[in-house]
Amino acid sequence: MTPSETTDLQSQCDLLRSLHRPGAPVLLPNAWDVATARAVVAAGFPVVATTSAGVAAALGYADQEGAPASEMLAAAARIASGVEVPVTVDAEAGYGMQPAELAAALRSAGAAGCNLEDTDYPAGGLRDPGRHAEWLRAVRQAASAAGYRLVINARVDVFLGPFVAGAGSGTQEALVPEALRRANAYLEAGADCVYPIAIWETGALRRFVSGVGGPVNVTRLPQGPPLAELADAGVARVSWGLFLYLDAMARFTEQLASLRG
Image (cartoon, rainbow, N blue to C red):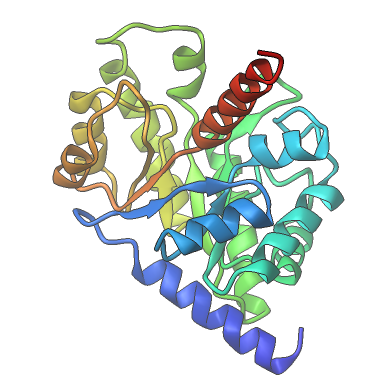
């Protein structure tokens, strides 16, 4: 990167970090290509977040690290170069990269921030929280050593498996202690924000936010609280994950079906 590009990226990192305000959450509609990223900016949102599911699908792959890292990061770089606002990249579980390699790849892509999750896809479960915290610490140290003020959003996947499996209401409270154990370890390791993906029950959310030592990102789920209630709970960041992509594809499919009419 040129000195000018480096300065611009650092400014974007600082801006993104400054927008994490508990009670006044930054809203992050998730984009999957340059066109959707530009639509996000045109609608007045100050940051673009990517959705790994949408990006992977646009590239012809399944989510959950089915796409090669090189292609996912190239897509992220195109998005980052196509808009003038900070871009935070869904980097999944790090694509099997070593921390220094990952930090360098994200910097080269122009990412002001990233999501890094604690699911171990090959093992079919969650990573050991202590080892994952040390990995996050190494990512932070590698970025800092390069003078790169990367905003790390550490995803906590404790609620995700039960949610996908169809767990009903009233089941999330019991998962909060483990989620907090992981979240606070990740923050202590250098994460800027934690992301308990798929948390949606109000009681569990408020307990999580009150027990964590840093900003919290949540997904705006259809069955979850409205934005005003999320703000009241102290959430600092709200994203939409793959839902805007799914909605766009559903509308496209409907339009295709109508063409024969």
